[in-house]
Length: 510
Image 1: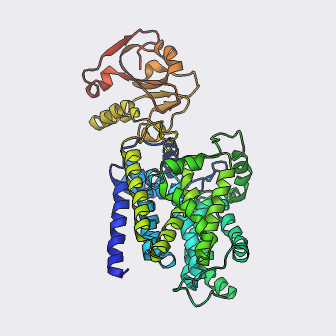
Image 2: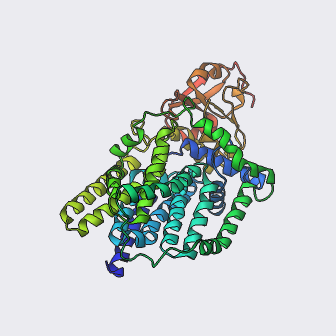
Image 3: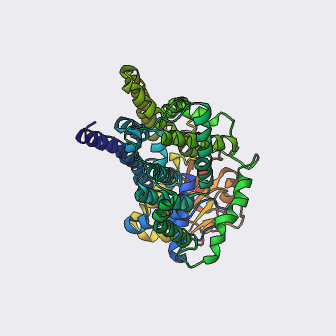
């Protein structure tokens, strides 16, 4: 494919990827984890840094990225999610331009297109969580190995060490992928001996660099990577003792992955997700069998490592849907290369039909998931997701604060066992208390409350005056809650809604 045509197709794929991720970015209410991440970011300014907690199983880098975004553009759901969108588009760009020389032009474009419209890729890119960044850094690390293998040692070492530093700074699951990369080497040797020899691509480099050359080329990027890891894990060097969390975290992390730790799923969980959403990945899983036969050694190694990582995630009982990115990212690659290889052998109609099928399904499934059923509990990807009904509580508060900024200092109480993402959504409200199971709630002194069903009778017995009451759900599998707004404060934001009178049992002195 000529460069001009390739670049035109590449731009089209990137525009599709950006459009799917950017359009109506604030449509979906903040996820539980987004609320936690946003709250951590809010604590960084007074603390001067992010204090790494080894029991949190997430590295510090994402919080610095989100902090930079909020500092530049303000506190908003769209701002919190924008870095993830950029990372998602960067993954597609990395495939189209970085992996091209290893896959071939047609395969790279098809692989990039599959990721551009993948329901999981789009859905997770529109979240302010770690997984899309983890995928980007993992693919950078793998690209570095492929580049060194192809003889481009200096550039390959920069890709490898940059990606490795990003993985270590992002999430503890980096050990799964590094182990898979490592174990894929002896497995590749077994494939060569027992199944079929490698098939070197025609455009392969003249030879792999000597170990001494790799060490020399790694000196500077490895030092930079080490300094970045030290800087961020030590909280900008303010808390050097936090560095030990780099290894102490695994004691708790291994316990979390065991049976009974929560989030257990059936053994076929990943296959079910792929069958429902990720047809390119499911077809790619079957296409991995093609690499049992003569195939390029670098791609064979990468596919082997991807299957190995997927097997590790399969064994671990703890499963959450966003991990599908790390489970299946090499499968569309296997599909794209296999289809390109088949097309080169004359099977053009068959390969074009299959490629069209998986892409059309990806577009349809992404649209339905991200813009129609984004909070529907019967969608497996919608997991611990906040309901759109949360706006019945937050919109009157935010509208009132825009009308009168003094409302930001109105007293309020959140009387629910699991409040996130509200601590971040209401982060500008200075006198909001989060009580959970705490019974010491001075409800009569509040101007607004959010109360879970089991606490309503107790809270209403304390109220006095006129209130507007709205019922809603924060998320599926959580008991209903009720929002209470003092009429004299929030009346303009609640026109036409019936107000209720409560007795003066708790008094009205505020």
